[in-house]
Length: 103
Image 1 (cartoon, rainbow, N blue to C red):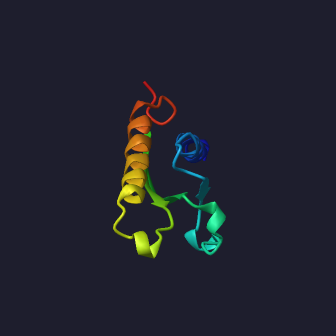
Image 2 (spheres, rainbow, N blue to C red):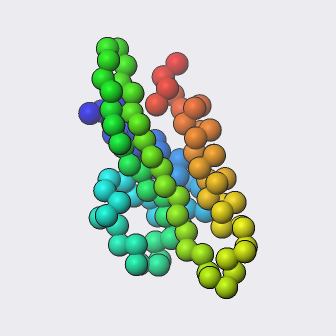
């Protein structure tokens, strides 16, 4: 279970360091109060599956980056761009992480 918590902690730290993330959560998406607008932009971590095969454990992880879009300004792509950039930066930082990928 240490590896599971290392992955969660590393991803939470990487997401919290991003300027376009206000709240980071993990676990069941249905436990989040999505009606509470002060939590957005929100990043949510879900561990979908773990495959254990000696000497490695492979985790299937989904990271959802969400924000509220104002309907009259729906054509404004800055929200989408910020969320995509956040996801890209987190994926890049995880590839360099010695916590998740020990060298």
